[in-house]
Image 1 (spheres, one colour):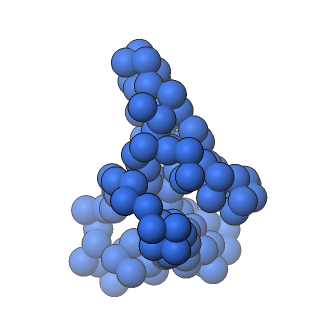
Image 2 (cartoon, helix red, strand yellow):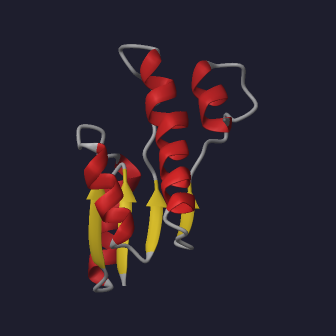
Length: 108
């Protein structure tokens, strides 16, 4: 099974990758500095998406939208466009009901 991890350089992504490799899963990765074409190529080649990518302390507030809302939207639209039924496990936050920009963009 091939598993795509978004946010593979983050705390959750790195640790989940270690766990999954011990179980002999093939890991595909996507991180914030990767090109969107890599994401799409990885989606086409994955059996499961672990969507851990997110922004919680950016230097620029616009990155909340880009890395929390827009990335999730791009993943979903690509799956729909390609008529893929790849399962997604999405992580959010316990702060979802806060009024912070972080919580708002994770909820979107």
